[in-house]
Length: 341
Image (cartoon, rainbow, N blue to C red; front, side):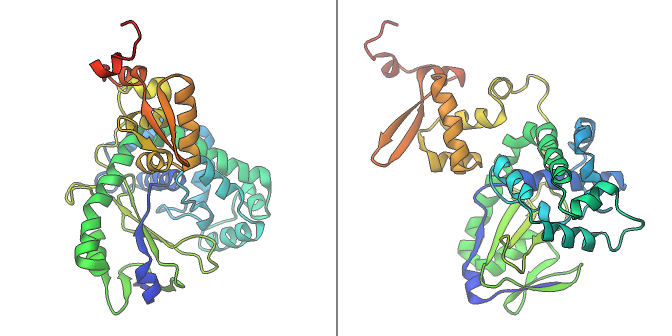
């Protein structure tokens, strides 16, 4: 049994992630694919996993070496930034000492010697680390990106369902809804299965629902405080449906807006069906404020949105062209701006 000890400060710092993490979701997809290869497909994943296997890029093969049978991976792949680029930079910036310790520890219970490139990675070789970054980048774009809007919707729906549980019943009731093997007992969280006892050191715990993960909750913990304490669990927005449902990729041309603009920029444009500030836009789409600002700049330069300053903040909204592209015809008031119709 695993035990997570909470101080009063830890309890006060239980909160939900504001957005899913692209790198983490990519690693979870890889873990699911590894389980599929081992003949242990979990319920709810079968609809999209065969598609993901067919789309698996050759450049992502280094991840097969990093993940153990059963889907476990070294901790340096835990990057929880809400933006893909930021998450990849976290992986790229992993210190040499961390690589050496985690990879040596990870390989202790595996048969044989690790591949040459893994040994080089443990020595801090930057080219080997770039292989990992490229593998994550390419797997994300091949498998995760075509499903990202659905994953975002699943994430926000799950959080919306559980926040009232936390507000009305407290953390004890909330943890009881995440998985049958988890329960709150004597100022701590117990999870039957793998063993170990962990202190949170007053940093609390971030809860992150995943649309791609279908297994038992996963816990990322760092005694040195290099990363936050994060509990990843399978999202079930309605409380009953299996996680992973609805993640089959759209047929070719099914999402023409995403095909035209790219999935993230299309999500930004759709989010601006209601005017929003940059921070709010980032939260809705599940990207960083810097990324939201950059996407807004491109959409503004192509006359799909307009940006107005309100004091120190800015507010983005659709132009007539943007509304038309979304299938929203301009209203009469929008046309009565003195221009010929």
